[in-house]
Image (tube, rainbow, N blue to C red; front, side, top):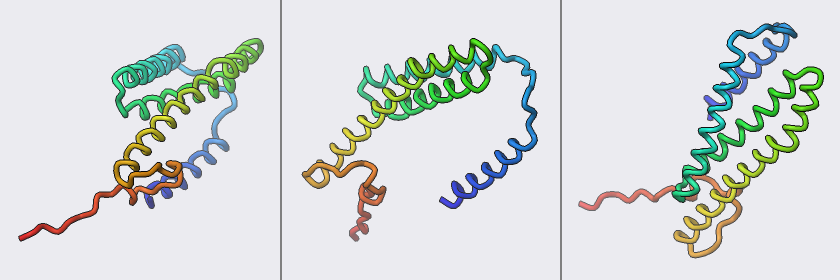
Length: 149
């Protein structure tokens, strides 16, 4: 936890520095490679989500969250880098495609977490689980049993 908090503080300081020092305009090399590579990552995460759903694998949670975050990031960068008529197109694309897609993927991940949590909880305690947001990792730890001599 200390590492996460420390990393957050360092990232906040770095972000403040970048906000102060970065130019408003910048010519980027390999712009096409950056966007095509990003879109390929989205395709791979969507295919991973579809495969995990088809195979009924728990890794669907990871694929769905990654795909959702890529859609949110795509919308963000489309909007903040657009000018003129591209800006309107970016807003429409974000509102009609990218954000709704991200919300569906977040829902898929949440539903998978809820289902598996309920199954585990029911197997352990023979009752329905509270919402996953109220559970702690300790409740799923296996009790350590001392070896018998």
